[in-house]
Length: 543
Image 1 (cartoon, rainbow, N blue to C red):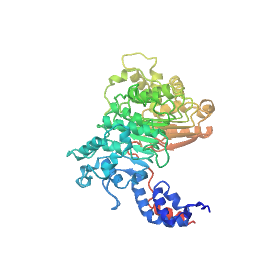
Image 2 (image 1 turned 90 degrees about the vertical axis):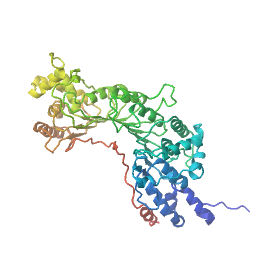
Image 3 (image 1 turned 135 degrees about the vertical axis):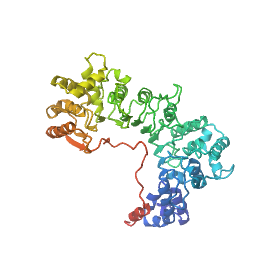
Image 4 (image 1 turned 180 degrees about the horizontal axis):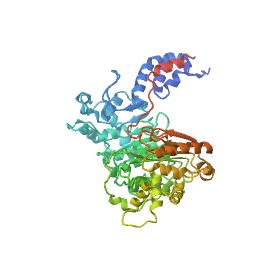
């Protein structure tokens, strides 16, 4: 007589179910628990441990204080490895991995005392010994493990003494469910760790199942800054393999000083030369235009969203010129396909020069955005418009002083109607006809009233011929007393013009960017549900 196969999990022998439930942690546990009351009852013994691991590891970042006495303080990669060796399931809980502060906290002696004792045998050594990625990279696990131990155990007085590059790279072999990663601020490439990273990337390209998913296979968002440990000349070369990940979509790069450095993406023999096939979004912070930006854009022709931020010059002679050069480079490389572009300047204090600086003798830069055929969202400071205005006012002038100086002199002394018409033509090409949302950033000073007047005079009458797609205009209108009366007056006039043209004007009291961009300096993820067990129980109560 044939034995009827079980039609559901609850038809299986009761002694098998706890093992099945434990195997479902963490990916399928909550769904399994919500299946029916019978399975939920069997899941109850696992819920507390699941919630504790989820709360600590789902949005992981290194810290020097443990908020849960039952969980250790994890302040460096080697400590995380030791915990995963003892509780392997913890690695599968990590979805958002902020490793930026790896090894930073142990300057505190209380934190240093929790460093794991590394032996040649035991769970930690076994984790290295059984690593498929180390084997794929052709690395001897004992030598690699010894390097990691030597880096952790050295007795330095410096603040980075607890950081191990070999441990930091090895952690990246343990994250099958991670979706976004911030690399450590102390990341320094070694030959062995670069081989290991390449082995990880190769495994992500191989067929896999849910339970055999390779580490980093789900990563879509990567963040890295330029620090003294990783100079700008190396940073983008480090990132190149990561950008070959199969689901990579967003790069946030450079929350340190990078101006003046040139980046190299590796030789033409690099196996990752075609990186960026899936990359759609990139954010650059104070990156060198001719080095980092241009070389990157040449490798990512299908990029759809780009944010580029620069430190703002304090001297009035060259404001906006760096952004003008950036626009020219961006338009040349990917202007025809880009859909979102944000250009911003971070203000910093610098004494204004008493004389015209040498770089002010350079010809004014004019910006054309005609090549941006698909652009729908655009954001830039009004200093960008002043570049075109200076070029229009100084183009036909001769004299011993610089052309920029002559243009500023004309702005200071007032403009004739003929000059206003000339600058209207010069700023018209700053906004492509395809733009739907436009954001203009300003402190309401530095002749920005003239820029507004030139850009939007007769806006209601000309809107449909110049910018037919425009629906929303975001404009800085500071209320802290910084803005000039002339600028505020132009804001008032524009509110009337936009109402007549059917465009929604959003006047903002600050000059911060308005579009939804990730925070560059301290990546923050959405807050955890503080009581996941209550959420689970609330859903179960509905059965």
